[in-house]
Length: 299
Ligand code: GDP
Image (cartoon, rainbow, N blue to C red; front, side, top):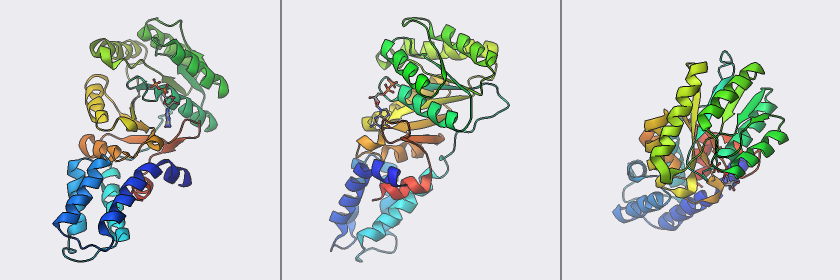
């Protein structure tokens, strides 16, 4: 909780500070409500959620004095109501051996780092984890994954950069099977400037994996960078269309005052949110829980 609160401090300061500025010594009226909506929209919660929250705050309190703390409590409960249906742990079905997790998202969103954090977490939980360096376009990504793998004693299946990612995925699944691994986590490239090729590559990775296991990948995690704000919404749209996203991870919530984007995404797409990233370290991946996030972000 302390780490989450600290990680979300920029967002909560902006929202909580804004609420304190608006409602200290002022009545609740159309002007203060509009200002509240503006604060929420600036924090990227989205117009729909901002309006609903303002309405919830207004209910029965019009022309009355309300304390900032009262507003924050209502905000937290409204945010929790949006997030509760999508806050879901990533469940590893042990009957799938290996359980295959494909990790997708645009370059720089934090895929490789998130895989490192997942490798740390699942190894600690006693799973045998194999990693596949499927971002074959960036030599640095392959190297980065090797470092994470070495740190947490996970084998990393890689080829020279420039290789075929789908072929690598096939090899990695075969290798993970041969080793009786519990989990295979595969990185992918994220060149959104070359969208058609990227989507074709993701489709091919999935198609080729299915030759070995018709149900693979068992989870497709889309990694989103919270600092890109509203752009994250279009990324969800683009990737869901092609790759059958099963869940989300939102990274870099520590680096932004616009963490409300997670609420906007939950509101719009209703996709499960499994984890949030609140730093660059191995332990900076938090399981996503609606109540804690809502309380932390409300300030
Ligand atoms: P990829 O291109 O999607 O694989 O992205 P990377 O994993 O290489 O991450 C890009 C940068 O974001 C790196 O410098 C990471 O350390 C950083 N990063 C990833 N996740 C987080 C996070 O949760 N918080 C912060 N502050 N930085 C992060």
